[in-house]
Length: 295
Image (cartoon, rainbow, N blue to C red; front, side, top):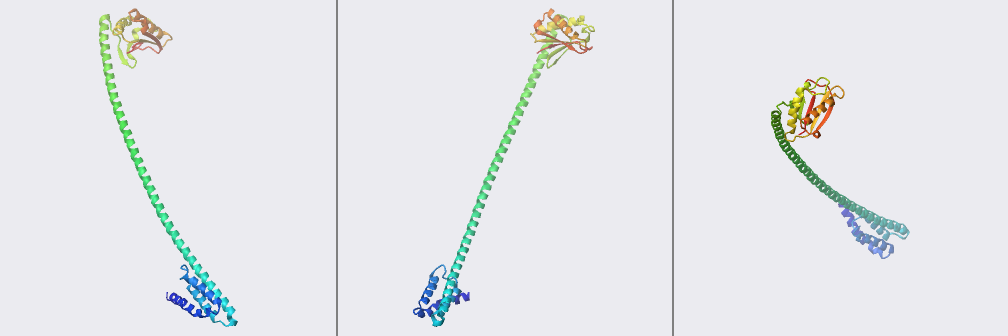
């Protein structure tokens, strides 16, 4: 810092020494003017102090030079002035580069801050959006679950109602069938064969003694059962009737079914209500034919 102050002081003092000689040599005046211009320029006023001092000293030497030393002194002074100008401009350019670099760094930092802020804002926007979507998905899941539970409850209620209704219907049908059976047996004076209910309707089973082995003519016991069955079928306008005859021999099951139909028709059951079918399956002691009454 002390050296810089001395250089500046020297620069202020040396022009005073060269002023008197400037009137005698135009080159001295021109070189002095170049240094004054360099000093007056705000961009270079405090730059290249050493080089300007050396240039001013060279101008003083030029002003005092003898004739034989004049050319060499003038060349040296011009070179020193040119060096001072070049150094000042170079330092000014470096200062400007440094300033621009600082400005660039500041702009980059500011841009980075803004970009980081935008990134944070975008991240927050995406987070909020994802949260909203998650909440909506959860709401929809809960709604779907509630709807499923409600549907299951409704189905269970309907199933329960349907089951109860079916049970009541089945109970009513069986009660009606029991009453019709009692009436038919009372009117005919004969007993109906055993029956059960399944998905086909009420199924009457004629035992194995309803037919002689390999024969299609009903036995006396079977004919008595058919009289009671004819009365039963005519009570309450029951549905269609399907007769299935069984025997392992070809055609015997079909003939047995037809014989049973003929007996029912002869007892007053409409022929159009009755369908017959032969099953090639061995007749057993418990079953030789079935009469199925649709609901």
